[in-house]
Amino acid sequence: MISTATFRASRPPIVGPDVPKPPFPIRLQGYIQRGFGRGGRDLGCHTANLPDDALEPITSATEAGIYYGYAQVSNQHQGPEQKGSLGEEDLKVLPMVMSLGRNPYYGNKKTSAEVHIIHKYPTDFYGHYLAVVVLGYIRPELDYTSRESLIEDIQTDIKVALNSLDRPEYSKYSHKPLIDSSSPE
Ligand SMILES: Cc1cc2nc3c(=O)[nH]c(=O)nc-3n(C[C@H](O)[C@H](O)[C@H](O)COP(=O)(O)O)c2cc1C
Image (cartoon, rainbow, N blue to C red; front, side):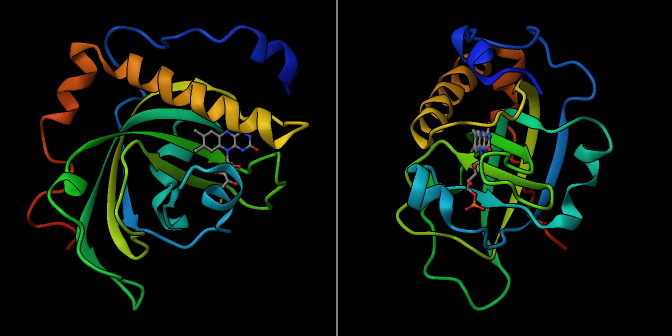
């Protein structure tokens, strides 16, 4: 694994080509699962976990790492967890950063895909249907010696994602719904 210190010392503000290149775009969708809850509690960064059976389109095409793209949450939900409806702004196609892998800092046993949607939600939305389009790769997963440096890097990932999505061939993906009216069935 690449040295965390070396990697952290020089982070480019924008990543990837001006037009998404294969294997992107990669589309993933499923009902949001409960994670360990550490994202919001320890890191100040809420994440929506995709179910394990939703990961094949990305695990078969690329490796663990931090990715960027767009996400859309639906008011359709499964299970008893729903707390209330999300509003119009919460249901739009919104920018996201996604961690794919085993979170070396926490040493998880299995691969997960955790999506942080760059938006302030009024409530949590476990059990809601989530669709994402992954458009590019930001960096490898790193192991950290402190929680503060992980928090700092997630904030950098968010800036890099917003800069990278602010190009016409990326932002056009935000103009089309990711969830059509017939989803999820
Ligand atoms: C943009 C982003 C980047 C992340 N980068 C790393 C990383 O480099 N190394 C790591 O161990 N975990 C990384 N994480 C994963 C966090 O450790 C994880 O999301 C957090 O533990 C929340 O997990 P939980 O929902 O299962 O509690 C990243 C998460 C996000 C959203």
